[in-house]
Structures are given as structure tokens and as C-alpha cells.
Length: 192
Image (cartoon, rainbow, N blue to C red; front, top):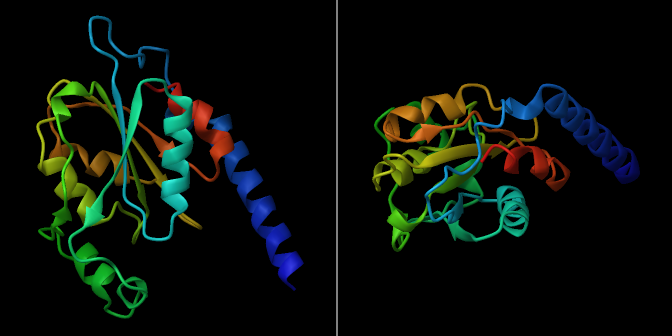
């Protein structure tokens, strides 16, 4: 039984990767390179409760030179019960409340030194978790390039990236994509 489940998961991941690569994962004409005249430092910020998004963020950080990893950590950690969807759990309540902004523990030092920010998150109820909004609203991203990426067992990226734009309206937003495994990292990295 476990072998069948594993094979099904692998086939699903391969199918999703092929679909993502076929549409270029939001990739456009190459205008997405780091602008000339900048210091080229890259921040890979991520929020992850199950380590799936963490693994993708670490893969991006390994692939992008001059990049630094930052984990967005909630002041009050999420428990397993907080993530039991459709039970009125904490995640359900936060996602239903447009004003929810869970507090973050810690902060990014010297955010101004980064020109490109990859921001990763799991999909919760078809959207980015509200803690991502907290992160974006905590800094001035004016003129910085933001590339969102997400992970999900069943949902696509949908409007999650676009919905974040209002939290950093003066940033240069790239389309980003859903990443199902680290083999899709090259497409995402090329968006910078």
C-alpha cells in the first residue's frame, strides 16, 4: 500500500512539474534579471510548518549566488491542531479574516541591502498564509524585485501571488510559481 501511494505521489509531482515547465512557470522575456547598478544580493524568505517550503527555499538559496536564507517564524508557533483545515482551527480563522496579521518572531537585518526577494509559502485555503502579509507589511520593498513561490499538495498558485501585491505596492512583482520539487528551481531562479 505504501509503495502504491509513493508511486502515485511521484507521478503527480512529475505531472505537475511538466505542466509548470510547459507554461514557463510564469517566466517571461528575460527582463526579469537583476537590474544593473544594484548590489545583486538576494534574500530567500520562507514560511514553512511542515518543512516542504523550507526544502524549496534551501534549494533556491543553493542555486542563487550571493543569496541569504531567512525563515519567517511565527511568534506563536502553529501546532498540528492549528492546521487541521475545515475544523475552525487557527489557520481556518486567520485565512477567513482579511485583517489577520500573525506576529512574526524576529526580523530581517538590513533589508535595504537586498535587491531581490524570493518569498515562499504553503498554500492555505487557496492563498498565502496571513503571516506572509505580516512579513511584507513590515518592510519597505520599494524598487525591490519580489518573486513569490508556493508549495501545495493539491492546489496551484492561483491568485495567491497577485493578492500579495497590495502589501508591498511599490515592489517590482514577478509572477512566481508553484514548486512541486527542487527540480523546478531553475525555472523559478531564472525569473530574477
